[in-house]
Image 1 (cartoon, rainbow, N blue to C red):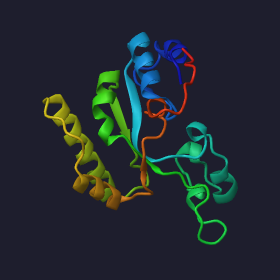
Image 2 (cartoon, rainbow, N blue to C red; image 1 turned 30 degrees about the vertical axis):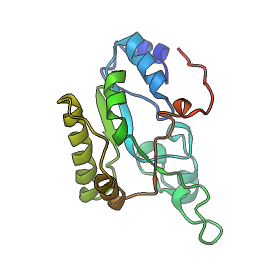
Image 3 (tube, rainbow, N blue to C red; image 1 turned 120 degrees about the vertical axis):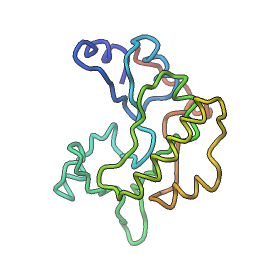
Image 4 (cartoon, rainbow, N blue to C red; image 1 turned 180 degrees about the vertical axis):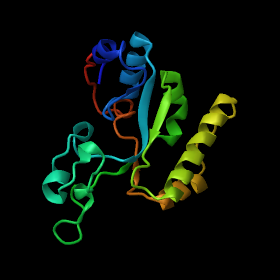
Amino acid sequence: MNSPAVELWKKDVDLFVLARELTKEEIKHIAATTKARLEVFVHGHLCISYSGQCLISSLIGKRSGNRGLCASSCRKQYNGDQYLLSAKDLSLINSIPDLVDAGVSSLKIEGRMKPPEYVATTTRYYRQQIDTYNKKHYQPVSEKATNTLKLAFNRNFTAGFFDFFSRGFGNRQSNG
């Protein structure tokens, strides 16, 4: 979640998976102050809980989401046909330049318990975006590519917290 935590574990860990709740400014700060290798979750199912600290899956589905066995209880219909708890899917595919420039070393794409077509499609488009950015030919993802990603599996897309504050939603004090 922050630079002090990364510094504390740096002697024992070579790649840090950052919390999904961090903004790009917070990620940049952690990268700049720690010089650690950082991984950021960029595409897939968002949990309604803070960094996956979910109990609903274990209480309703008898499966721990914290151990990779999420029953997706928050994505079920409640009160008839309403999806009251369902979060949108994270997609940072149009944020590749920001991620690379922030110092991110590795991108995490949801793949566990997903069909091979989803993994292949999603990975292919992210790889294309990284390659075009590295070759200085970057362009935002086309509408066709976005629609293909949505067809793979989707609950509509969001950038989550990544650019939350640059969209004018306030200012959060960084934890270091």
